[in-house]
Amino acid sequence: MLTPTAVEAVRDITSGDGAPQDAGLRISTPDDAQSFHLAVAAEPSQDDEVLTAEGARVFMDRKAAEFFDDKILDAGLDAKGNATFVVGPQAATS
Picture 1 (cartoon, one colour):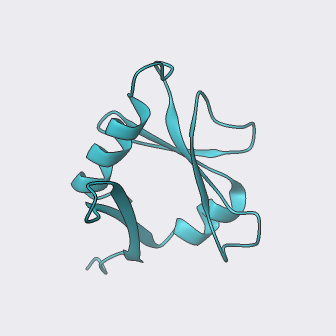
Picture 2 (cartoon, helix red, strand yellow):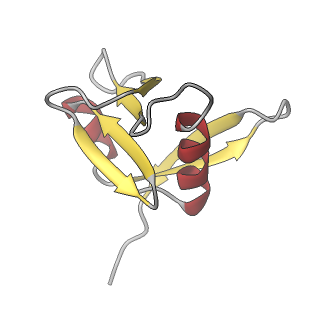
């Protein structure tokens, strides 16, 4: 799940000059969710899970998708104005 702020950050990151029209933010984990790599990708890899929200596209490899299954991705700006992402638990639904 993406917050509105994260949706905006992903759209900004993936719509820069020279970015492919259907680009997305690819999240992958080389070490079973101990760390994550983020990169702009023209399209998802073959086994990626694709999350779309209000024009933002996120591609996740299998291990990243498993980790983020019950999480929410939020975004903010650091002191230099760069986007930063924060992961938190999803609110329980009743």
